[in-house]
Length: 216
Image 1 (cartoon, rainbow, N blue to C red):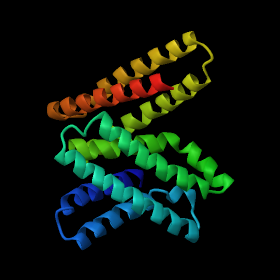
Image 2 (image 1 turned 90 degrees about the horizontal axis):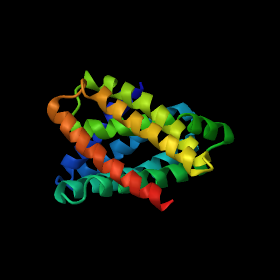
Image 3 (image 1 turned 90 degrees about the vertical axis):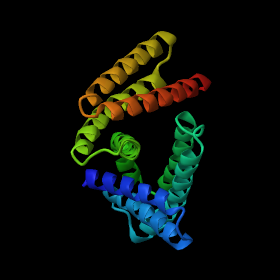
Image 4 (image 1 turned 135 degrees about the horizontal axis):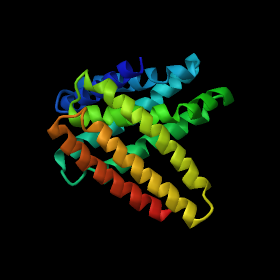
């Protein structure tokens, strides 16, 4: 079910890009479908009818922003890598912050427990769109993303709780090691061309995250 939702979100997002040059009604329909897919992906929270309606409204706003970002990236080659990644994170953080405010304590607990899956979902969705992954590649890529998303979240928690530079340096080395291991795990799954694009995008994201952490 998770992989089915991931594939659906990615496919609908690509359709949104294609339909932006089409009549407004069709483009809006595609955005609505993306928002619905994003809402369906929250099934594990067991939202009430009112919560589902509110979540759908939030997802429509996020979906519209994501589509516009995608189109901007297609038309402006400078708006890719870190710049695009930063904006996508902002859109999703805005959506997530609003969503969490309406959750019950039990639902919020479930949300926090699914952080790893949420990160793996997002990474896989982006790779489907960027690399045009095949149906055979998707579950393999997702498994790799899920494994290393768990390790990343654990290291982020360690980094936030570290009280001195030595501890932070140790965690930083672990994160670099995990990143290299993830790249090696992806290599046999992707074609040579896909891997080149993957590495280019990974480097751009790494630079952005590095700059972001320096500011904190």
